Length: 281
Ligand SMILES: C[S@@+](CC[C@H](N)C(=O)[O-])C[C@H]1O[C@@H](n2cnc3c(N)ncnc32)[C@H](O)[C@@H]1O
Image (cartoon, rainbow, N blue to C red; front, side, top):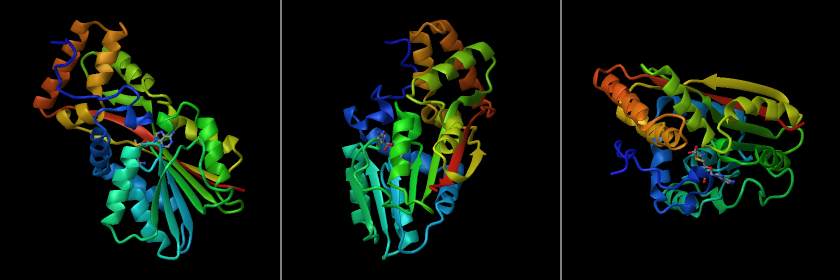
């Protein structure tokens, strides 16, 4: 038995959300976004993102990296039958799930396309609003992607909203402070752009957007089993051990401590995510 498989969590593909279709188990990712969507803070974050888009009936709105499509279906209701809500994702598995959900909904004005954020297949200035929810953390070249996002927003009043965590902000109450730091570093570094959240404000300002605002919020986790899954601490601690940042024994002690805290009902972890919004001048 591998010394790392004690938590029973599966991480089916090292490319993760950057290239879901490489995975043998694409349903894992659909289930993951569905689970996250149920969290209270995520719901509130999405409501804030929608309001920051300042959409009106008849508008055209784009959700890049739309995942299983639920946000597009909500946006379709906001822009109404005279508007258009488009979702783009680079995963066929996600786009087909989004289309399946759309077919079961009443939203005739929602459309899903397979495509990359790096080459958005729409002319300049097509959309009144463009959003990306927890996508930039998975991008190798966020600057190139953001240039594309800005390009398809309308000049003068096109709104852009980006929501992402900064994984360096992950805190966990553990008896092993240094081991925790090494594991959270591994957790942040395995993502292509784990610091996305703290970079979005600068990215909006550098692009010359107007009326730039930034909000932050901290999802808090007190359920040990859920947190290990959601925060992918199995993979993070395994990576830290495999990279030699911590020993296998240190990892085992770290996990045992958190498991005990879970049993005692005093497990605690949290991170910070940010929502930037701005207008294309
Ligand atoms: C964490 S999920 C979030 C999905 C959705 N926005 C939500 O809030 O549920 C990130 C999504 O970004 C997509 N993605 C990753 N890299 C992408 C790229 N280069 N172009 C388009 N979509 C991408 C993934 O396939 C995945 O569906």
